[in-house]
Every structure is written in structure tokens, then in C-alpha cells.
Length: 181
Image (cartoon, rainbow, N blue to C red; front, side, top):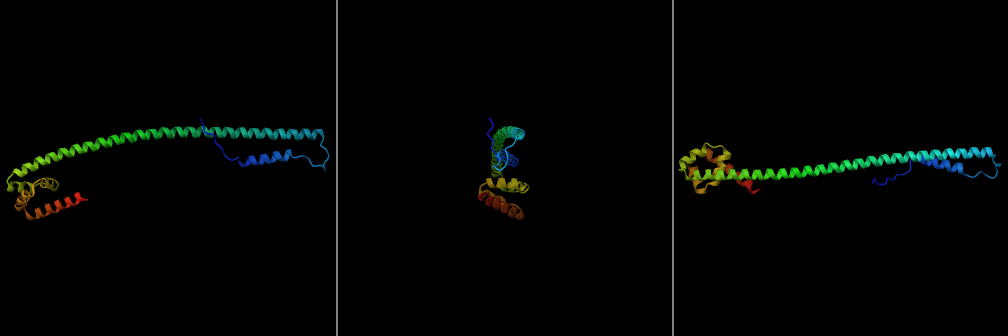
């Protein structure tokens, strides 16, 4: 059911009411009694005025009813859009959780592989490990070095080019600083 809409009367309604009051005002004592024809004209004028008032009131009622229907249709559309957004939000949240779980699974697989590779490097002779790590890209070399025991890293660094050792050390320290933050 449409809610009741209340508004102030439009400016023309005040003029109509004032005109009706003027027409309905009693005739002064100083005037002569109007004739029957004049009374009939006055009654006819008042009747026309009342009919016009009725017509304007009915027109305003129809306008209010149309506005109420329009508002009701907008409310229903807004409710439907809100429900759609809630459904989409729930779907996006489910996708987000699924993606986060997938990322976690992939990170776990990568970590396991890097752990296996680090075990291989730890089992290698320090000279072979130094040569192999020197040729790796920075992120891969860092990931492996972070998993090796400190003593093993020291042996490997002793056999590597000093500029490469400085760069890897700087990157290792930078990674630790980022992890603390």
C-alpha cells in the first residue's frame, strides 16, 4: 500500500479559498435586497466556483496518486537493485576467499619446492653451490639462501665474487627489514 503523501496546498488553492469566502460574505445592510435574478446569478456563480474547486481538487488528487505510484515503483526498483548488489557482493566475497585459498596453496607449493632446492644446495659442495647461486636471478637466489643454515651460506659466500656477495647481502637485509614491518 502506498504511503500517504501530505503536502502544503499550492498557492492557487489559497486564492480559490479567498475568492470563495468573498463570494460567501453577507451583503451589507446599506444595500438594497438583491432581486431574485441577482440571487440566482450569485448562486450560479458560487456553484461554478465550487465546481472549479472540485475539479482542481480532483486534479491534485490524481497528481498525488501518480506521484505515489511513481515513488512506489522507484522504491521497488531500489529494493531489487539492493538485493542484486547483496547477491553480487556475496559472490565476490566467495570468489575472494577462493582466490586467497588458491594463492595460499600455490605459495605452499612454491615454499615446499624451494625447501627441496635448498636441501639440494646444502648437500652440494660449497664451490658448486657458489657457482650455481651466482648464476641465479636475485629473487631465486635470495629464496634459497634464506632457507640455508648460516654456516653454509658463509661457506658459499667465501667462494663467490665479492660484488655479488655484497648485493645479495644487501637484498637479504632488505628482505628482513620488510618482514619486520
